[in-house]
Amino acid sequence: MKYYISDLHLFHENAIKYDHRPFDSIQEMHEVIMKNWNDHVTNGDIVYILGDISLRGKSEDLIAFVARLKGRKVLIKGNHDDLSDYRYQQLFTEICDYKEIQDSVGKEKYGLILSHYPIFSWNNMGRGKILLYGHTHESEEDKFYQSCLRQMQENDCRHACDGKIRACNVGCMFSYMNYTPRTLEEILAGVEVETK
Image (tube, rainbow, N blue to C red; front, side, top):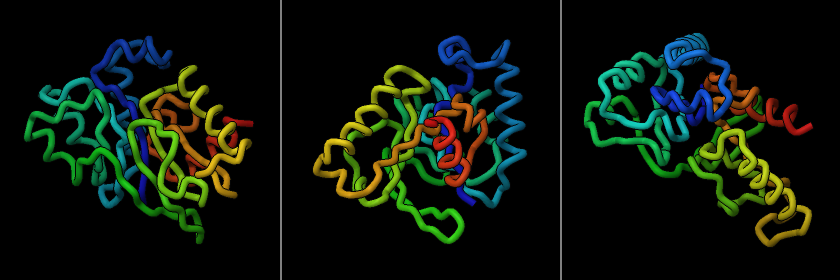
């Protein structure tokens, strides 16, 4: 099984206030993330983390925390990911800036673009490939980005082709993510409900 999540911001106390996260402390946030993750993911699963696990990677506490998260972890680097500690790097099956993969929901296959950052044009965006991203959190910036994508489609922009442009923010703070790695099926269903 493949799972996706972004912008955990572990050990980042200001993230609670910035995102209006429903936690009274970093410790409570960490406990919920650890429980949700390990209740949902098995060690045979792959979890694509689309950046910003934390503000720094040298912390002994961070290394110990990430080591306890189940699954084979692939990190798509974000602007807050400090990978200077070799021990921290070893917790990931792969570390990259951008990745193209395939996933499926039932019998339907999907091409996915994985990036920490929202982008305006990606490979086969108008032919069904879906962008999964993070970085913008649940913000006015993210609403503006989604509005721009809708306008590109409505105005028959060149790369929109005939397909529906889909870009899904997998930031952990969204209600459909709920601080839990989610499958593509869960994400697509959650985004659909969110945009209605």
